[in-house]
Image (cartoon, rainbow, N blue to C red; front, side, top):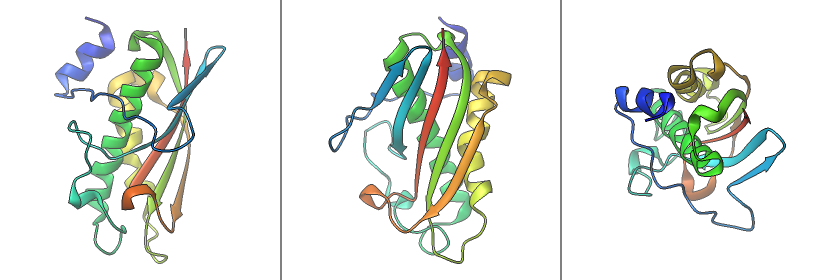
Length: 156
């Protein structure tokens, strides 16, 4: 068992089957030693989105629930990354995460929501999980998701 797989197991995390694209794009692109992963939604192990993760943060969705949804997005990023490279021990760095928060215009606590994804990367990858990041509030997301997260990783 790889070191990262062991860490995931210790955290009680099972990686889902990576989600298939829902439009004209690919789930990831590898170029040189970089893997760029398309935005991942807060889908569960069953490939479905919980009703609690649908809607606008600051209205139907609380900041705490959105933070948990961002963590789920990060788990889905790791599932795609494993599909791209086979062994997560090949990951040398989480370079960047981009977070999109489906929020009401007055919701300003975007960064703490995105910490759900950022914290998971550090929990799983240690110092290699520390990354640059952008977090933006948006008017809508696919499937009415409250959060979507994309990522860029350096690999061996």
